[in-house]
Length: 114
Length: 107
Image (cartoon, rainbow over all chains, first blue to last red; front, side):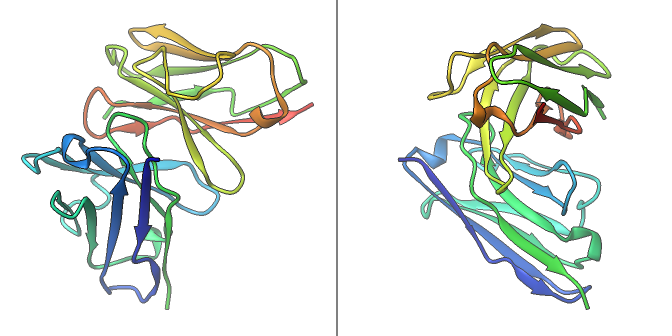
């Protein structure tokens, strides 16, 4: 069974940092590009970052460029999102998803508030 | 950036009805178009990839079509579990972009 399990979310203050993880199982993680996608409360889906299967290329939405870093460790079947200088507008459910193959996690909530 | 215009934003429909949701890209996306279903609990289910290919396990009442800038998702006969939000997404170029969503509601 394919699983993507996100963790690392929580309530943080503006300006702080947080690192999300997404552990994959049930498919060959190292063969797939991976995305982070978020959804603010009562809003639509917003893509924020993509990393190629071998980490050779990374792409970011303008809204997070320079503040967020996507990375992966294929030996651990894990995708990461390091988030710095967090703002209230970063409050959202964060999902990891394969670039192809149709694999999505259940999401992890990040709340940025003082 | 490629803008994805999804219509309608909401759609009341009845069980057994055939419905179509549309998505228009601001420029050609070479069929690099996905469709997703989101349930009220937040669970996202990929339905269709590359315009018209069903993801594994997706019922055959779902179908996708289109080319160039215009794409659509059709549900041939609505089942109770189909009432949900639907999103299109282009992956032709970065930034990947989503449509604003269609809420399929029971009439």
